[in-house]
Amino acid sequence: MVENEFKKIAALLEKGIGNLGYARIDHHRHQRCGFPEVIFGEGKTAEQIIGIVTECQKNEQSLLCTRTSPEKVAAVKTVHPELDYCPISRCLMRRGKISPVKDFQVTIVTAGTSDMAVALEADNTLKLSGIETQMIHDVGVAGLHRLLAQIDELAKTDVIIAIAGMEGALPSVIGGLVKCPVIAVPTSVGYGISAGGYAALAGMLGSCASGLTVVNIDNGFGAACAAVRMATLRK
Image 1 (tube, rainbow, N blue to C red):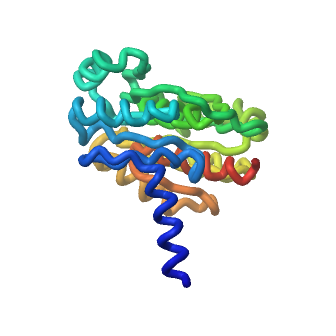
Image 2 (image 1 turned 120 degrees about the vertical axis):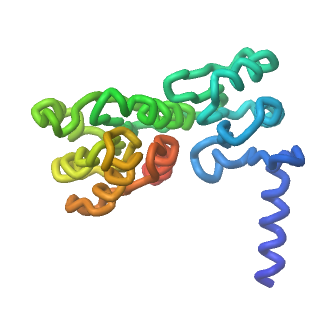
């Protein structure tokens, strides 16, 4: 009985997959998870990206290709000139037919300007998922008064994505000041002992501000997806 039910579910899901041989495109991801199908551009050729983009456009869905080099973008845009590119975050994207998530806002906070690429990756992912965002930059703990000046804004948002490199203290400070969910993103910004973001990651995982959600190093996309899942609970 259970086995038959699993087979029925698998058959339904298979109808929503575009099989290109080298990739299986998930046309129903937004309906299930709240965020669109995403291409990890760093590990794919320009030709593979072109094929995936072409398949995704069949359903007029939003599309996001992360970590895409300018060279690959140039080749892809010869076939798909309608795509937009953010060179700082290296996001190649197209906004499709997605209903906005009403009465829900995510605030993206960075410790320093060097964290901007990760912040924009999160911002682009959220916007393509229909979520309103605001960004507050360069309010790290080296000048705590800069963060404290933003308390009113932080207090009225629904989710905060706090992005920091170095020792990664920013999410802990924010976590002690607000009641909304805080998603911490360590970045690979910092000297020597920062070890490409591992010091920030360890600091965030070991935070004394209880209840932080921590994602992988430089993973603005993952932080945004966590926020999208939280947003779906408010619908």
